Length: 199
Ligand code: GTP
Ligand code: MG
Image 1 (spheres, helix red, strand yellow):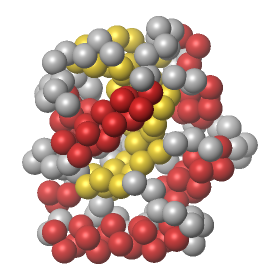
Image 2 (spheres, helix red, strand yellow; image 1 turned 90 degrees about the horizontal axis):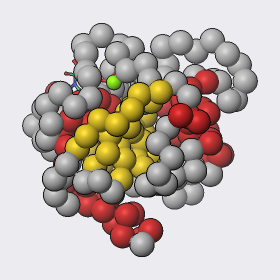
Image 3 (cartoon, protein in one colour; image 1 turned 120 degrees about the vertical axis):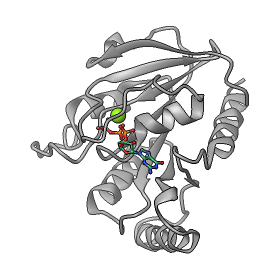
Image 4 (cartoon, protein in one colour; image 1 turned 180 degrees about the vertical axis):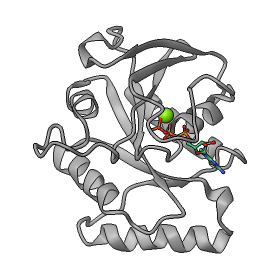
């Protein structure tokens, strides 16, 4: 898929103020600093479309980017650095939970995982929570440029083993590097296939 246009539309803390044009959207979620905003820039090949930072907690809002005037990429704040509440809805942050649960035009969420880390309880918890809510998702392992190919494979396999404890079927997963551009075509093709299935 060719990205001809990528335009920032709006930032929000309130899901009710997100665009109401009904266009389908794909969201990026994961722990702070995992590389959500960098991945959006890599996919769109726009260097500074989404704001990135070496410090966790850079993205604090729901950010909508309109792609080819047809669909949205949505950059979300990270979870895992402000776990204060106990209720399900706010465990991963109020903004995130209400967005994921209430946004009817959300067709798929990409859950980003740092490929350098062994399976993290908060990521597994989040994946399981998405499953329990019946929300469609795919996994994206980020920062593959930081490991050898073998170590990337071992890390993905470790995640698959951990997921097998709770899942009969493993989710679709991708390996990416925003630095090297790895995984760009695969993720965009996946998005394109979903968009075509909506027509
Ligand atoms: P929050 O908005 O704070 O939740 O973070 P985020 O998930 O949006 O992460 P962001 O894209 O801001 O990236 C965090 C840091 O990781 C930055 O210093 C990026 O340069 C770096 N980074 C992101 N993706 C990659 C990658 O694929 N490879 C390498 N080497 N570094 C990356
Ligand atoms: Mg960000």
